[in-house]
Image (cartoon, rainbow, N blue to C red):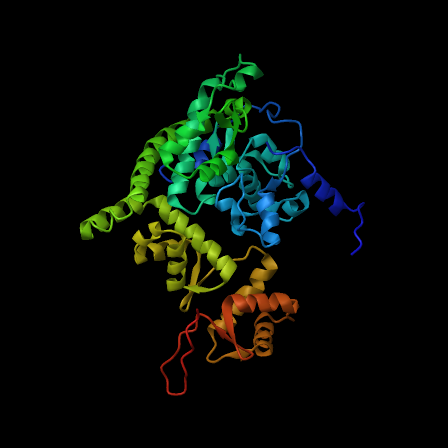
Length: 444
């Protein structure tokens, strides 16, 4: 195929790939509204580099996944970096502009892991008020030395690794806090940058968490840089943001103080459980109950909600049992979550239609209109229907012609129904016990 190097798409690829090389729930009583209500001082110039941002995340693993070599060992990354699900590949400004503002903020954080407020504000492609941007950051990220780091629950699926990453961020804050200048002026730019000798020793963190060396390296490289055998946050403290938003700084100072105490206990408990996996099996029902009380936490339930939401978006309608099996396949922490707790979590991220759970919306107004109509049509099914019959019913319900491409329509149908010899049957249909009704086979 001929490719025109003068097109905007070519410029987007060049800007994306040709750049500089890459070297919780128990919060304060203050709500997000309280934090955003306090007037802020005008922020000064961005402390970040004048060079453009490099929008590349795990490109090597991404290319290996495309070429079918995702299982090869990557010297720089851990096991997660070899997983095609984590190999996100490059992100261009053109792709970013197609997303909603909240999706843009999340995507920037997911690719960069930690970034300054000024850079995030510059990268968002649509005008957004500072208060709205702060609201989104408080939803998806935590403040680390004046910069914003994506919450650990959006990076890892394992509760132990989530605790380890929070521990890492807390230690990086503690090692770099002495070099944050006071909020009331008087400090030059040199005071914002810790000396090369300051930082967190890699071996100390590995010894505390007992993670593999590759896993520790991968976790450190996401948020930190190495200098003279010590690791520090990849960005210097953002004194301008801290001075402009003292309420947010005070809030996270208190939050990190509590989180550090909590995460140290979590790491000790989970580390010992991993080191002695047979311990919980020999303790009888009493030990099992104790482990469950430790494991089930608001953070675990929040993670369960995120994983269920992701599964529904990628796999379509699923039964409760299928969602339970999906969670249990991630790690054993979810075994401690009771069915009633999981059902309460699902009610916050999904809707139940018949015997299955569905993602409430797909995020596109036109697609949601057709999707909602299709759900109503399928709910009324008494027997499998052909695609033409379903389209006719949708057209009558909406009083308009269904102008969806055939590929898009089939994608909606596969999300909500199963094809049985050319006829579509709703996944959530509850079989009746009448004489003329034949129960549908279970959906696997």
